[in-house]
Image (cartoon, rainbow, N blue to C red; front, side, top):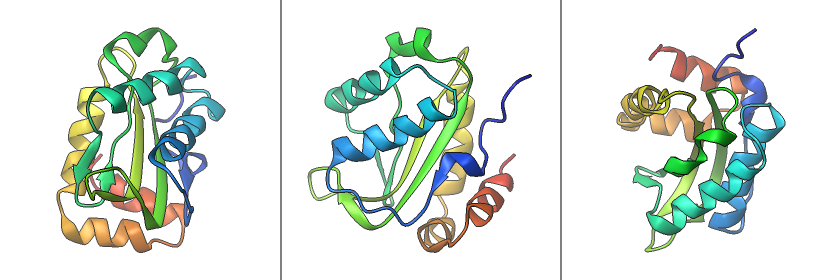
Length: 145
């Protein structure tokens, strides 16, 4: 049975995080815990961040693995971490929404484009930052599917 890419178990709200590395480890840890990726995938997410920032603007970062992380992906999945106080991603970039991605068989490009559509609307960002339940988060992303 194929897993759903995004469900309420993949969402953590109102989290307080001290560093960018902690943020990426937490985001990847959800993907590991929910069975989307092997633990090695988290190291590839950190490596990706060292190569180029996954900060996308608009308080959003989209941590994901490097090209060579594909063997560690079991199923396509998304994790979501809301950090209302923000976490510094360097160069003055504050991140309040972390969206971790693992894509099987190049599905990550499709997933990324759907996330980009949601996150391009400032109104959606405000809703995501202030959401009080996983259901609210899922509803905002459901509009894209």
